[in-house]
Image (cartoon, rainbow over all chains, first blue to last red; front, side, top):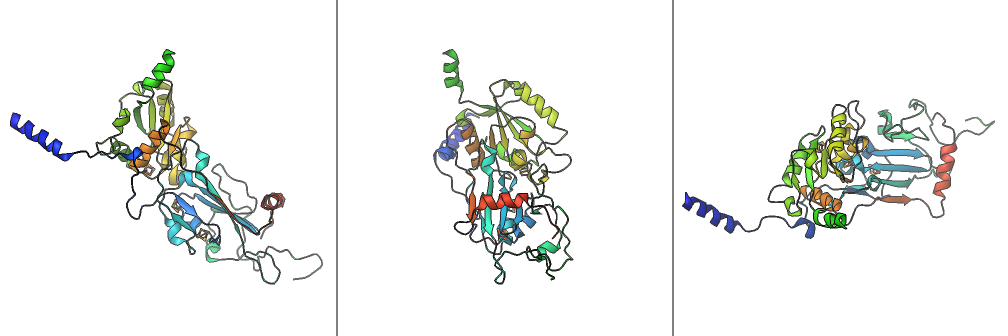
Length: 178
Length: 172
Ligand code: SF4
Ligand code: SF4
Ligand code: SF4
């Protein structure tokens, strides 16, 4: 029995130090690690694909005519990188950053403001009905000054009638027919 | 003076009480992981204890469900002062994908005041160690919000948004 204990002790000494020195030395992440997401407002076209697939609905888009405001509630981001997969412009990507602990939750709320492209004829921004709009997906995209519900999500108010043609921002002027 | 001395001598040794408030067990496994010899959070004097009355810190995992909320409140009240609450995992930080479900309150801070939030689903063991070290003031905070704008030069964004918010909603 004593011999067995001695053998155990020798094995333990042979193993050396296994504990990571982590907070005092950096710990590299494995390949394909998905950490905190980052984004680039210069590349984003505000198509809404990321907001449509985000499982915890942490990406919220508000269309405000010539600008679109995209809010990231990263306090509920699960770092699944689905937004990165669907983004046609690769304007949003996961980083290696995992040290996201914070005493203040507002550090986890990011936003970007994107300038929408303009019509060559009238010089103003316009809305297009794309495939995602036609899903009538509710609650991830707010048109206009909707009231935020308790989770900060802007419900569509009033309901958008997608069957209506010619949904330009510009209203017809008084006295002029279409 | 004795209080200062006690703070200096005892302030670095957090005893943790781990509460699962409706977690999927992912975060719980990672919390257990940081106690193994590989990550070895006992280097900082942290260890799990069996009663909230012995604990300095509550480790909350899981998106707090309605059923468990009164129990969490009682746990918090049973923990002696001074205490810290560490919310581990996206569930405990913001409610994860269940943040608006009928039976989920959506985060530990709806029930108890939280000292440190550690997001991630589940967070890496290193991220939990970092959060614990942050609670002890051993490492600086690194995360900061990202605000980006891509608008033409000279465009008055604040005025535009204010104007937009005053505009009545038209059916489009
Ligand atoms: S980040 Fe990508 S997917 Fe999301 S709105 Fe911008 S372009 Fe579309
Ligand atoms: S990583 Fe996942 S949860 Fe986070 S913003 Fe992207 S789609 Fe949403
Ligand atoms: S944050 Fe993710 S891993 Fe942790 S309890 Fe919630 S669902 Fe599970």
